[in-house]
Length: 175
Image: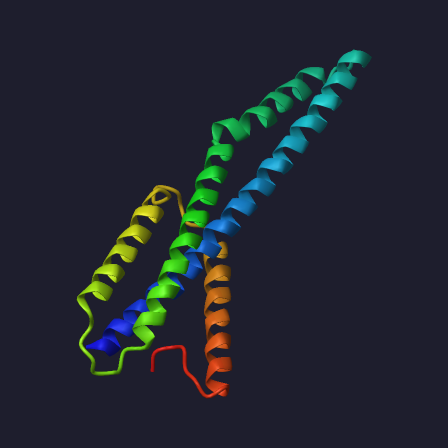
């Protein structure tokens, strides 16, 4: 019984790690896009001002492009989305620490020990919290490139950490 429980806690911990990395990276990527859009709007505004001063025929198209570049971050609610992703990342980072604590307790269980009801309840609470946090972003399409990169990064981190512990004579991953 405790082997399945330990596997479940391990998977929850690694999943929380992957998700915290994902939402942190997503917030960073969206912030870069927002900055680029702001710079583009500024450049277009300067070009529009220059064209207006020169009485140039391209003034109207430049003004329209400036208006579009200025409105896009508002239309796509980039500021709100960045805040939401950063919030998810922070909440998941906090939750990840709780998963690590639970893993430390689950790791001490012997393979055939019965699972303490308190530990099982804690695992259910952590899984429920993780679902509640990620539900905030469920309506937003997942960025597959970021998901793959953060998944690979998290799995490589835990594989390396597990290999290092095994080389030292201990195991940190379920067997």
